[in-house]
Image (cartoon, each protein chain N blue to C red):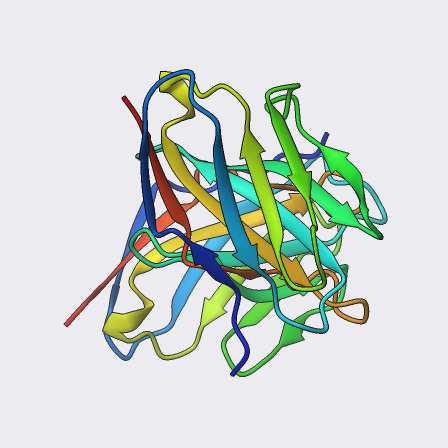
Length: 109
Length: 114
């Protein structure tokens, strides 16, 4: 089963880009990479997902390396409200997510 | 904006009692999920449900757990005989057929087993 590795925590200055890395070296060819975040103890919130091409939406960008063993979530202009735990997820089954420990992003003024 | 709702927000029960946690998924969604998060720990997948049957479940989801969609709107998680270690936040989620990868989570029910 593909699992992910993320740094425990990161700091980012408000207004700057936040780059959150994730290693998923055992990912298989047809597995997507998903990013969710959890603010305080709220339910996780979907951010973005991708297979092998870079993706962008209104929240973030996702950069996946060519060998697909790692990816980076980019929040282009972090705000204080982006302080959360960010989870990089590889789906284990059709719709079975393994969340991992995530990265606690602290956005500071 | 449509959202997943869960009731109650907090449930306190005695060990050995049965509890039912309720969820109302987004109305046109077809895939439903339960997750749990023990305080300070990871979000853990419990079960997914589609077309009125369980599609996947984790090793946590043993015979003490069951799920049901009793009508067209509710999705429930039952724990038959609660244990202390069942104390956790339980999240319900749902996703649509066209965007099944994008799961919308509810606010959670905090279950406390005494």
